[in-house]
Amino acid sequence: MAEKIELEIVTPKGRALAETVDEVTAPSVQGEFGVLPGHLPVVAALRPGIVTYKQGSELKKVAVGPGFAEAGQNKLLILAEHFADRAGIDPVVVRKELAEVQPKLDKVLSVLESTPELEVEKKSLIEQENWLAAQLELYGDPPPPTMRPFEEWGPPPSALAEEEEAARSNDLPSGSP
Image 1 (cartoon, one colour):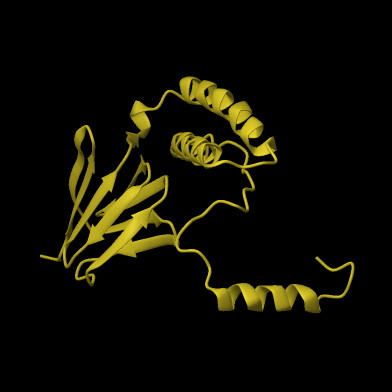
Image 2 (cartoon, one colour):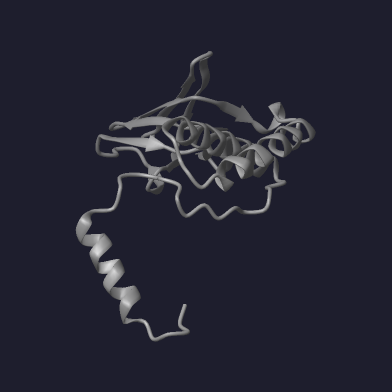
């Protein structure tokens, strides 16, 4: 018998999913990563997105909120704030919630002077928006993409990387992107 992975997704409400699978793909803050049987141990921070797993020839998808994943030899444990499968998503309700979050976020983003409280509110609204977008993506009706260059996924860039980026942008001829 071929090796399998024990996939478990747990939320604050309890165990949301427990399956034996062939492979898993999950959304980390540094990009998607895959887990196959025999994977080396790793811990990753997760962003809201789609977890895809394969059982035989069948591909299944669920949405998870922010959290953490711990992969081992033949196990992947995901601790996430939220979990949704396609059957549990009401796109009308999710779109309504998204329509309520976006004006609040636009208002927070329009404020020129930032305060710690405003930063916390901005981060919370962005997390809500991303979770709602992940649900709609799973449902098959994703919202239009948003460009948020200030979103922080993963570790901040090193000083060397910032210097290299600044040097590259200074080397561009005027009128270049």
